[in-house]
Length: 391
Image 1 (cartoon, rainbow, N blue to C red):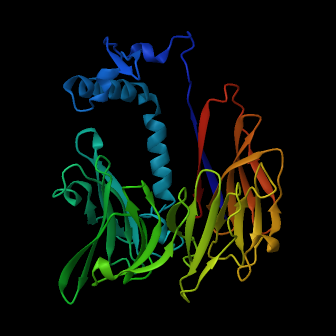
Image 2 (cartoon, helix red, strand yellow; image 1 turned 180 degrees about the horizontal axis):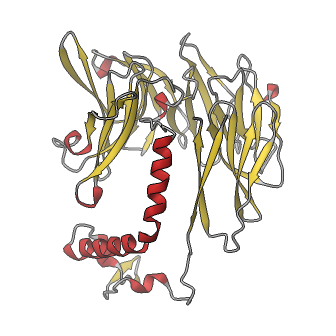
Image 3 (spheres, one colour; image 1 turned 180 degrees about the vertical axis):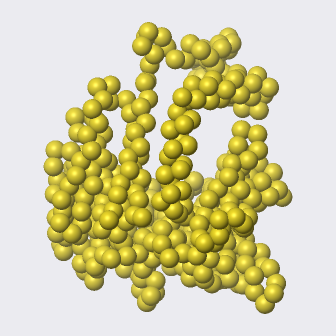
Protein backbone atom coordinates (compact mmCIF):
# COMPACT_ATOMS: atom_id res chain seq x y z
CA UNK A 1 0.00 0.00 0.00
CA UNK A 2 1.31 3.42 -0.92
CA UNK A 3 1.44 6.30 1.50
CA UNK A 4 2.22 9.93 0.96
CA UNK A 5 3.61 12.67 3.13
CA UNK A 6 3.38 16.39 2.50
CA UNK A 7 5.69 18.92 4.11
CA UNK A 8 4.37 22.48 4.24
CA UNK A 9 6.65 25.43 4.80
CA UNK A 10 5.07 28.80 5.59
CA UNK A 11 7.00 31.98 4.96
CA UNK A 12 5.74 35.39 6.07
CA UNK A 13 7.03 37.77 3.46
CA UNK A 14 6.91 40.94 5.58
CA UNK A 15 6.66 41.52 9.33
CA UNK A 16 3.16 42.28 10.57
CA UNK A 17 4.26 45.75 11.61
CA UNK A 18 4.91 46.64 7.98
CA UNK A 19 8.61 47.16 8.65
CA UNK A 20 10.86 46.72 5.64
CA UNK A 21 12.89 43.52 6.29
CA UNK A 22 15.96 45.14 4.73
CA UNK A 23 16.04 47.74 7.53
CA UNK A 24 17.93 45.22 9.68
CA UNK A 25 20.92 45.37 7.30
CA UNK A 26 23.57 47.97 8.18
CA UNK A 27 23.86 50.70 5.56
CA UNK A 28 27.15 52.32 4.62
CA UNK A 29 27.17 55.32 2.32
CA UNK A 30 28.43 54.40 -1.15
CA UNK A 31 27.62 55.43 -4.72
CA UNK A 32 28.26 53.92 -8.15
CA UNK A 33 28.37 55.89 -11.38
CA UNK A 34 27.02 53.96 -14.37
CA UNK A 35 26.77 55.64 -17.77
CA UNK A 36 26.95 59.02 -16.08
CA UNK A 37 24.19 58.21 -13.60
CA UNK A 38 25.03 58.30 -9.88
CA UNK A 39 23.35 55.40 -8.07
CA UNK A 40 23.40 55.12 -4.26
CA UNK A 41 24.24 51.62 -2.99
CA UNK A 42 24.32 51.48 0.83
CA UNK A 43 24.68 47.68 0.72
CA UNK A 44 27.79 47.67 -1.46
CA UNK A 45 29.86 46.46 1.49
CA UNK A 46 28.06 43.10 1.35
CA UNK A 47 29.55 42.28 -2.07
CA UNK A 48 32.86 41.33 -0.48
CA UNK A 49 31.70 37.97 0.86
CA UNK A 50 35.07 37.23 2.46
CA UNK A 51 35.43 40.43 4.47
CA UNK A 52 35.35 40.08 8.28
CA UNK A 53 32.32 42.40 8.45
CA UNK A 54 30.26 40.29 6.04
CA UNK A 55 31.31 36.99 7.63
CA UNK A 56 30.34 38.31 11.07
CA UNK A 57 27.01 39.56 9.76
CA UNK A 58 26.26 36.16 8.20
CA UNK A 59 27.26 34.38 11.41
CA UNK A 60 24.99 36.63 13.48
CA UNK A 61 22.06 36.09 11.12
CA UNK A 62 22.60 32.30 11.19
CA UNK A 63 22.49 32.39 14.98
CA UNK A 64 19.20 34.32 14.85
CA UNK A 65 17.76 31.75 12.42
CA UNK A 66 18.79 28.82 14.61
CA UNK A 67 17.23 30.53 17.60
CA UNK A 68 14.01 31.18 15.69
CA UNK A 69 13.57 27.56 14.57
CA UNK A 70 14.31 25.97 17.95
CA UNK A 71 10.61 25.34 18.43
CA UNK A 72 10.60 23.08 15.34
CA UNK A 73 13.53 21.00 16.57
CA UNK A 74 11.37 18.24 18.05
CA UNK A 75 9.17 18.16 14.93
CA UNK A 76 12.27 17.68 12.80
CA UNK A 77 13.43 14.84 15.05
CA UNK A 78 10.00 13.21 14.69
CA UNK A 79 10.33 13.42 10.91
CA UNK A 80 13.79 11.85 11.04
CA UNK A 81 12.54 9.00 13.23
CA UNK A 82 9.64 8.36 10.85
CA UNK A 83 11.98 8.38 7.84
CA UNK A 84 14.25 5.87 9.58
CA UNK A 85 11.28 3.66 10.50
CA UNK A 86 10.17 3.54 6.89
CA UNK A 87 13.74 2.77 5.74
CA UNK A 88 13.77 5.62 3.23
CA UNK A 89 16.68 5.38 0.79
CA UNK A 90 18.37 8.51 -0.53
CA UNK A 91 20.09 8.13 -3.87
CA UNK A 92 23.09 10.01 -5.32
CA UNK A 93 21.24 11.49 -8.27
CA UNK A 94 18.88 9.92 -10.78
CA UNK A 95 20.92 6.86 -11.65
CA UNK A 96 19.59 4.69 -8.81
CA UNK A 97 16.17 6.30 -8.45
CA UNK A 98 14.40 3.37 -10.07
CA UNK A 99 16.42 0.68 -8.31
CA UNK A 100 14.83 -0.14 -4.94
CA UNK A 101 16.82 -3.38 -4.99
CA UNK A 102 20.10 -1.46 -4.66
CA UNK A 103 22.52 -2.98 -2.15
CA UNK A 104 23.21 0.27 -0.31
CA UNK A 105 21.61 3.16 1.50
CA UNK A 106 23.20 6.52 0.63
CA UNK A 107 23.35 9.62 2.83
CA UNK A 108 25.29 12.87 3.34
CA UNK A 109 26.78 14.60 6.39
CA UNK A 110 27.52 18.36 6.41
CA UNK A 111 30.93 19.36 7.75
CA UNK A 112 33.17 22.40 8.16
CA UNK A 113 32.51 26.01 9.13
CA UNK A 114 29.01 27.01 8.03
CA UNK A 115 28.68 23.37 6.82
CA UNK A 116 30.40 24.29 3.58
CA UNK A 117 31.20 20.77 2.42
CA UNK A 118 29.67 17.31 2.63
CA UNK A 119 30.84 13.79 3.31
CA UNK A 120 29.03 11.25 1.14
CA UNK A 121 28.55 7.81 2.70
CA UNK A 122 26.89 4.54 1.93
CA UNK A 123 26.17 1.46 4.03
CA UNK A 124 24.86 -2.01 3.34
CA UNK A 125 21.12 -2.17 3.78
CA UNK A 126 21.37 -4.91 6.37
CA UNK A 127 24.25 -3.20 8.23
CA UNK A 128 23.21 -0.69 10.88
CA UNK A 129 26.71 0.08 12.15
CA UNK A 130 29.54 0.48 9.63
CA UNK A 131 29.52 2.96 6.74
CA UNK A 132 31.80 3.52 3.75
CA UNK A 133 33.00 7.02 2.88
CA UNK A 134 32.47 7.43 -0.86
CA UNK A 135 33.53 11.01 -1.33
CA UNK A 136 34.67 14.00 0.71
CA UNK A 137 33.70 17.40 -0.62
CA UNK A 138 36.83 18.89 0.92
CA UNK A 139 39.29 16.31 -0.41
CA UNK A 140 37.68 16.31 -3.87
CA UNK A 141 38.85 19.89 -4.46
CA UNK A 142 42.03 19.88 -2.35
CA UNK A 143 44.23 20.37 -5.44
CA UNK A 144 41.92 22.92 -7.10
CA UNK A 145 41.70 26.29 -5.35
CA UNK A 146 38.35 27.99 -5.78
CA UNK A 147 36.57 24.80 -6.90
CA UNK A 148 33.59 23.17 -5.21
CA UNK A 149 32.11 19.68 -5.42
CA UNK A 150 28.79 19.94 -7.25
CA UNK A 151 27.38 16.42 -7.59
CA UNK A 152 28.32 12.80 -8.06
CA UNK A 153 27.03 9.72 -9.87
CA UNK A 154 27.68 6.01 -9.40
CA UNK A 155 27.81 3.52 -12.25
CA UNK A 156 25.04 0.92 -12.42
CA UNK A 157 27.19 -1.69 -10.71
CA UNK A 158 27.80 0.86 -7.90
CA UNK A 159 31.57 0.30 -8.17
CA UNK A 160 32.66 3.39 -10.14
CA UNK A 161 32.14 7.01 -9.20
CA UNK A 162 32.11 10.21 -11.25
CA UNK A 163 31.74 13.69 -9.79
CA UNK A 164 31.83 17.31 -10.93
CA UNK A 165 34.03 20.02 -9.44
CA UNK A 166 33.43 23.56 -10.62
CA UNK A 167 34.80 27.08 -10.24
CA UNK A 168 32.07 29.68 -10.65
CA UNK A 169 34.58 32.51 -11.03
CA UNK A 170 36.55 31.00 -13.91
CA UNK A 171 33.50 29.10 -15.24
CA UNK A 172 35.46 25.85 -15.28
CA UNK A 173 33.92 22.43 -14.69
CA UNK A 174 35.63 19.04 -14.59
CA UNK A 175 34.15 15.54 -14.34
CA UNK A 176 36.48 13.30 -12.36
CA UNK A 177 36.15 9.52 -12.52
CA UNK A 178 37.60 6.99 -10.09
CA UNK A 179 37.46 3.22 -10.54
CA UNK A 180 39.38 0.04 -9.75
CA UNK A 181 40.52 -2.51 -12.31
CA UNK A 182 43.10 -5.28 -12.13
CA UNK A 183 43.88 -4.34 -8.51
CA UNK A 184 44.74 -0.80 -9.57
CA UNK A 185 42.94 2.49 -9.02
CA UNK A 186 42.44 4.69 -12.09
CA UNK A 187 41.68 8.41 -12.23
CA UNK A 188 40.34 10.18 -15.31
CA UNK A 189 39.13 13.69 -16.06
CA UNK A 190 36.71 15.09 -18.61
CA UNK A 191 37.39 18.81 -18.90
CA UNK A 192 34.76 21.49 -19.44
CA UNK A 193 31.98 18.97 -18.82
CA UNK A 194 28.81 20.25 -17.18
CA UNK A 195 25.97 17.70 -17.64
CA UNK A 196 26.77 14.00 -17.60
CA UNK A 197 25.34 10.53 -16.90
CA UNK A 198 26.72 6.98 -16.75
CA UNK A 199 25.63 5.32 -19.99
CA UNK A 200 27.00 1.96 -18.85
CA UNK A 201 29.60 0.71 -16.39
CA UNK A 202 32.32 1.68 -18.88
CA UNK A 203 30.93 4.75 -20.69
CA UNK A 204 29.64 8.21 -19.85
CA UNK A 205 27.57 10.64 -21.88
CA UNK A 206 28.25 14.35 -21.31
CA UNK A 207 27.99 17.89 -22.66
CA UNK A 208 31.07 20.15 -22.66
CA UNK A 209 30.64 23.77 -21.58
CA UNK A 210 31.88 26.46 -23.97
CA UNK A 211 32.97 29.51 -21.94
CA UNK A 212 33.19 31.82 -24.96
CA UNK A 213 29.45 31.57 -25.60
CA UNK A 214 28.37 30.62 -22.06
CA UNK A 215 26.53 27.50 -23.21
CA UNK A 216 26.72 23.75 -23.84
CA UNK A 217 26.13 22.80 -27.47
CA UNK A 218 27.43 19.27 -28.04
CA UNK A 219 26.97 15.78 -26.61
CA UNK A 220 29.79 13.23 -26.47
CA UNK A 221 30.26 9.63 -25.32
CA UNK A 222 33.41 8.89 -23.29
CA UNK A 223 34.76 5.36 -22.84
CA UNK A 224 36.83 4.68 -19.74
CA UNK A 225 40.52 4.25 -20.41
CA UNK A 226 40.56 6.41 -23.55
CA UNK A 227 41.62 10.07 -23.91
CA UNK A 228 38.95 12.74 -24.13
CA UNK A 229 40.19 13.63 -27.64
CA UNK A 230 38.79 10.28 -28.85
CA UNK A 231 35.28 10.84 -27.45
CA UNK A 232 32.47 10.28 -29.96
CA UNK A 233 30.25 13.24 -30.90
CA UNK A 234 26.58 12.21 -31.12
CA UNK A 235 24.78 15.59 -31.12
CA UNK A 236 25.74 19.11 -32.21
CA UNK A 237 23.30 21.99 -31.67
CA UNK A 238 23.47 24.71 -34.34
CA UNK A 239 20.89 27.20 -33.04
CA UNK A 240 22.70 30.13 -31.42
CA UNK A 241 20.24 30.64 -28.56
CA UNK A 242 19.83 26.96 -27.63
CA UNK A 243 21.65 25.18 -24.79
CA UNK A 244 21.95 21.39 -24.43
CA UNK A 245 21.72 19.07 -21.41
CA UNK A 246 21.38 15.32 -20.88
CA UNK A 247 19.40 13.28 -18.34
CA UNK A 248 18.36 9.67 -17.90
CA UNK A 249 14.73 8.61 -17.89
CA UNK A 250 13.66 7.07 -14.60
CA UNK A 251 13.33 3.76 -16.41
CA UNK A 252 17.04 3.86 -17.36
CA UNK A 253 16.01 2.85 -20.88
CA UNK A 254 16.55 6.25 -22.50
CA UNK A 255 18.87 9.23 -22.28
CA UNK A 256 17.03 12.45 -23.09
CA UNK A 257 19.10 15.07 -24.89
CA UNK A 258 17.24 18.29 -24.15
CA UNK A 259 17.93 21.47 -26.08
CA UNK A 260 16.21 24.83 -26.15
CA UNK A 261 16.02 28.42 -24.95
CA UNK A 262 13.56 30.33 -22.76
CA UNK A 263 10.69 29.91 -25.24
CA UNK A 264 11.28 26.77 -27.31
CA UNK A 265 12.48 23.25 -26.55
CA UNK A 266 13.27 20.03 -28.35
CA UNK A 267 14.11 16.56 -26.99
CA UNK A 268 16.10 13.79 -28.62
CA UNK A 269 16.29 10.34 -27.05
CA UNK A 270 19.03 7.73 -27.07
CA UNK A 271 17.84 4.13 -26.72
CA UNK A 272 20.40 2.65 -24.30
CA UNK A 273 19.81 -0.93 -25.45
CA UNK A 274 20.16 -0.31 -29.20
CA UNK A 275 22.16 2.93 -29.37
CA UNK A 276 19.46 4.38 -31.67
CA UNK A 277 19.08 8.17 -31.55
CA UNK A 278 15.61 9.57 -32.25
CA UNK A 279 13.62 12.77 -31.78
CA UNK A 280 10.39 13.22 -29.82
CA UNK A 281 8.97 16.28 -31.59
CA UNK A 282 10.93 18.65 -33.86
CA UNK A 283 11.12 22.20 -32.50
CA UNK A 284 8.25 24.59 -33.04
CA UNK A 285 8.80 28.22 -32.03
CA UNK A 286 7.12 28.85 -28.69
CA UNK A 287 6.56 25.14 -27.97
CA UNK A 288 8.05 23.80 -24.74
CA UNK A 289 7.80 20.20 -23.58
CA UNK A 290 9.37 17.74 -21.12
CA UNK A 291 9.41 13.95 -21.51
CA UNK A 292 9.02 11.28 -18.81
CA UNK A 293 9.46 7.51 -18.87
CA UNK A 294 9.23 5.37 -15.73
CA UNK A 295 10.05 1.64 -15.39
CA UNK A 296 6.48 0.39 -15.97
CA UNK A 297 5.65 2.83 -18.77
CA UNK A 298 4.77 1.56 -22.27
CA UNK A 299 4.47 5.11 -23.64
CA UNK A 300 6.24 8.43 -23.21
CA UNK A 301 4.46 10.93 -20.96
CA UNK A 302 4.97 14.54 -22.05
CA UNK A 303 4.20 17.85 -20.37
CA UNK A 304 3.51 20.27 -23.24
CA UNK A 305 2.08 23.69 -24.02
CA UNK A 306 1.33 22.84 -27.68
CA UNK A 307 -2.12 24.34 -28.33
CA UNK A 308 -2.44 24.49 -24.54
CA UNK A 309 -1.05 27.73 -22.98
CA UNK A 310 -1.78 26.49 -19.45
CA UNK A 311 -0.05 23.19 -20.16
CA UNK A 312 -1.29 19.60 -20.33
CA UNK A 313 0.10 16.06 -20.12
CA UNK A 314 -0.10 13.73 -23.11
CA UNK A 315 1.07 10.22 -23.95
CA UNK A 316 3.11 9.38 -27.07
CA UNK A 317 3.81 6.15 -28.93
CA UNK A 318 7.44 5.17 -28.25
CA UNK A 319 8.04 4.13 -31.87
CA UNK A 320 6.34 7.26 -33.27
CA UNK A 321 6.54 9.94 -30.55
CA UNK A 322 5.89 12.99 -32.75
CA UNK A 323 2.99 15.28 -31.81
CA UNK A 324 0.54 13.79 -34.31
CA UNK A 325 0.48 10.61 -32.18
CA UNK A 326 -0.13 12.40 -28.88
CA UNK A 327 -3.18 11.50 -26.81
CA UNK A 328 -4.39 13.73 -23.99
CA UNK A 329 -3.78 12.17 -20.57
CA UNK A 330 -4.42 15.29 -18.46
CA UNK A 331 -6.18 17.85 -20.71
CA UNK A 332 -5.63 21.60 -20.32
CA UNK A 333 -7.73 23.25 -17.62
CA UNK A 334 -7.97 26.62 -15.92
CA UNK A 335 -4.95 25.72 -13.78
CA UNK A 336 -1.44 26.45 -15.05
CA UNK A 337 0.80 23.37 -14.77
CA UNK A 338 4.04 24.71 -13.33
CA UNK A 339 5.98 21.49 -12.72
CA UNK A 340 5.53 17.73 -13.06
CA UNK A 341 7.30 15.09 -10.96
CA UNK A 342 7.25 11.31 -11.10
CA UNK A 343 6.08 9.72 -7.83
CA UNK A 344 7.04 6.06 -7.92
CA UNK A 345 6.20 4.35 -11.22
CA UNK A 346 2.43 4.74 -11.34
CA UNK A 347 1.76 8.35 -10.35
CA UNK A 348 2.56 11.95 -11.16
CA UNK A 349 2.73 14.88 -8.77
CA UNK A 350 2.02 18.24 -10.38
CA UNK A 351 2.45 21.79 -9.14
CA UNK A 352 -0.41 23.94 -10.41
CA UNK A 353 -1.10 27.65 -10.13
CA UNK A 354 -4.78 28.45 -9.59
CA UNK A 355 -5.82 32.05 -8.91
CA UNK A 356 -2.20 32.89 -8.12
CA UNK A 357 -2.10 30.15 -5.49
CA UNK A 358 -0.01 26.97 -5.71
CA UNK A 359 -1.66 23.56 -5.47
CA UNK A 360 -0.22 20.05 -5.28
CA UNK A 361 -2.04 17.24 -7.07
CA UNK A 362 -1.44 13.51 -7.38
CA UNK A 363 -2.39 11.88 -10.70
CA UNK A 364 -2.88 8.11 -10.96
CA UNK A 365 -1.50 6.96 -14.35
CA UNK A 366 -3.80 3.94 -14.56
CA UNK A 367 -7.09 5.68 -13.82
CA UNK A 368 -6.29 9.33 -14.46
CA UNK A 369 -7.84 10.15 -11.06
CA UNK A 370 -6.61 13.40 -9.56
CA UNK A 371 -6.26 14.14 -5.86
CA UNK A 372 -5.53 17.79 -4.99
CA UNK A 373 -4.13 19.03 -1.68
CA UNK A 374 -5.66 22.39 -0.84
CA UNK A 375 -3.74 24.62 1.59
CA UNK A 376 -6.07 26.92 3.48
CA UNK A 377 -3.62 29.78 3.86
CA UNK A 378 -4.93 33.28 3.25
CA UNK A 379 -1.51 34.87 2.80
CA UNK A 380 -0.60 32.44 -0.01
CA UNK A 381 3.00 33.03 1.12
CA UNK A 382 4.10 29.42 1.38
CA UNK A 383 6.03 26.72 -0.40
CA UNK A 384 5.28 22.98 -0.28
CA UNK A 385 7.34 19.91 -0.97
CA UNK A 386 6.08 16.44 -1.83
CA UNK A 387 7.78 13.40 -0.31
CA UNK A 388 6.92 9.94 -1.63
CA UNK A 389 7.00 6.82 0.55
CA UNK A 390 6.50 3.29 -0.72
CA UNK A 391 7.29 1.09 2.29
